Length: 330
Image 1 (cartoon, rainbow, N blue to C red):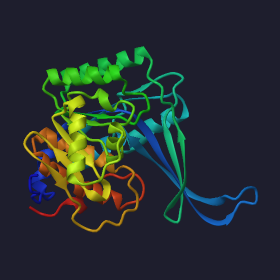
Image 2 (image 1 turned 180 degrees about the horizontal axis):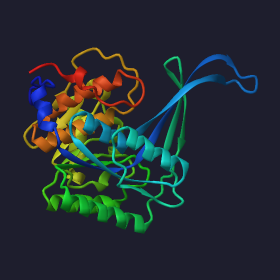
Image 3 (image 1 turned 60 degrees about the vertical axis):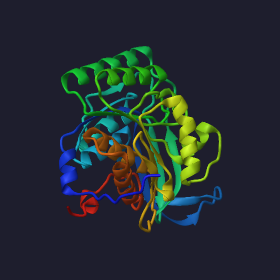
C-alpha cells in the first residue's frame, strides 16, 4: 500500500482549475428547505407541528455538481431533463440566480421535475418529501441529448465529463454507453458518480466513484471500511468495469483510491463535527474531475477530496465548497 503524503489546497492549485470546462450529464433537481420551529404536537395525529419561518431552494443533483465546479474556478455545462410547468420554471430561475446556464435543460412533456423538500426545525430534519419520476426518457429526448453532446464536444470541448446518476431516468444504459464511447474516441476523461441501478453500465470509465454502501450492494457483501476488504471488493468490481481509476468514499474512514500506479486509503486527519452529509458526494466528484482534467495523481486527488468533503459535511443542507476555508497557503 502506497504511503499517504499530505497535500493541501493552495492558490497555485486553484489557478490550474481556472476556466477548466467540465461537462456534467445527469439528473438535476430542486433541493427545497422549509425551516421553522416546533412547540407542540398535533391534536390530529402524534406528529410535530412545524411553525413555518422561511424557505429556500437550491440547485440539486447534477446542478449542485456544476455549482461545486464553478466554486472551484472551473466552468460547468449541465445537460439534463426536467418536466414542464411550475417547478421546471422554478428550476430555470434557480439555475439563473446561481450562475448556471439552463440552455441545455430539456423539458419533456408529461415528465415530473424532481423536487426534494426537507422540513427542518432546531437544526434537525423532521421529514423529506420526494417529488420525482424515475422512468427512462422518451427516445426523442435521448436523441436530443446526444445531439447536444455532439454539439458541445465539437464547438466547446470539455476537458472532462462527469456522469452524475441519481437513478431518476436521465442516464439510461444506451446513453451511458454512447457517452463513454464518444469521449474515449475524443480522449476526454469520463468521471462517474453512480447509483445502484446502472452500477455496471459504466465500463471503461476513467474514474469510478461509488460510496461504501453502493460498493457493498454491488458485490452483495457487507465489508469493513479497512484497506484489504475494500481492495478485494474493488478487485471484484474491476473485473466487470475495467475503469482506469477508483475512488470509494468511506465516510468517517476517509477515501480509498486505486489506479494502475498507486493504491491506499486517504484518512480524515482531523475531528469532524458532521452537520449534514448531503451533497458530500457531489463535492468529491467535482474535485476529482477537476484533478483528473489537470493530471494530478490519484493519491493527491483523494486527499484533496477528503478535505473538501469534510468541509461541506460540517454545514447543514446541500452546500458547495468554500474556497476561503479550503486555502491553506502555498
